Length: 129
Image 1 (tube, rainbow, N blue to C red):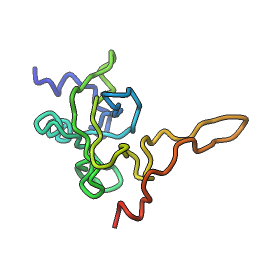
Image 2: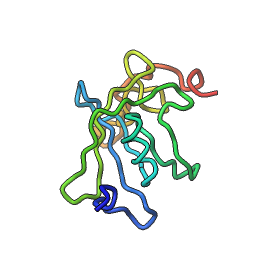
Image 3: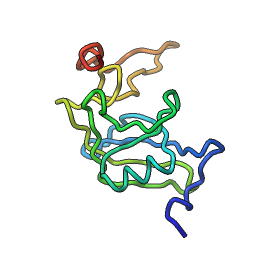
């Protein structure tokens, strides 16, 4: 059996993926992969996702330079979610989010409202042209 056949792909042929920083354990982002994206990720050791809005492969960092080096690819117990253990490159401290923050999970629910609790490390207009 092909290793890709062991994954439970959704109706669109996608699987959800969580990127976690290998050194800190921080959850950096959530994205999607199709078979080609996962095959490329495994072959290159670099995160390649499937952009649903662009309907194409998205090599993380192709515009921003914030590339994810992949150390491990893990699958959950139901075979329907993947976890990438990565090193985020391109800025120090690392930026994974298109908002210029370290993590996409920067909103904290507290006292009945959402609060941005991580700083913008680089203005997104300076990242994307």
